[in-house]
Length: 125
Image 1 (cartoon, rainbow, N blue to C red):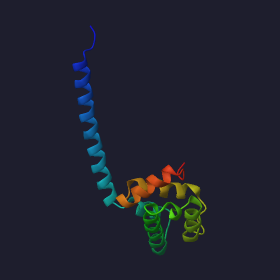
Image 2 (cartoon, rainbow, N blue to C red):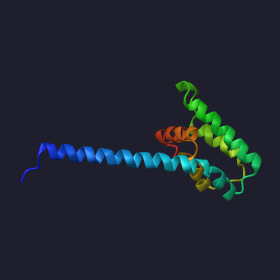
Image 3 (cartoon, rainbow, N blue to C red):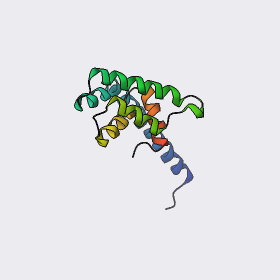
Image 4 (cartoon, one colour):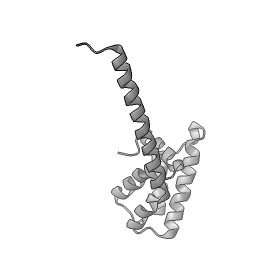
């Protein structure tokens, strides 16, 4: 028995509705996760001082603002790595940097936008 166009349209509409529900749940989950400040937990796990935490947040705030600016002022991976190394001079564990960058995806919305930029530019592997 052939599948009718009405059946296909109904299935697509059902799938679309389910997808919207999943997206809404994902957005809610991200909002809840961001209230826990997951980046603070990562920094604490790696022994970052309070001064280092504040310096990193200042760097991230600066980068997030520059991402929305003119193309010529957008940050580069090299700039980020240089600034990051100044904040954490004795931290040579690449996993730490990657974990910080990955955690931005579930941080506050400002950092999620920065994370999307970093991913688009190939900073995260």
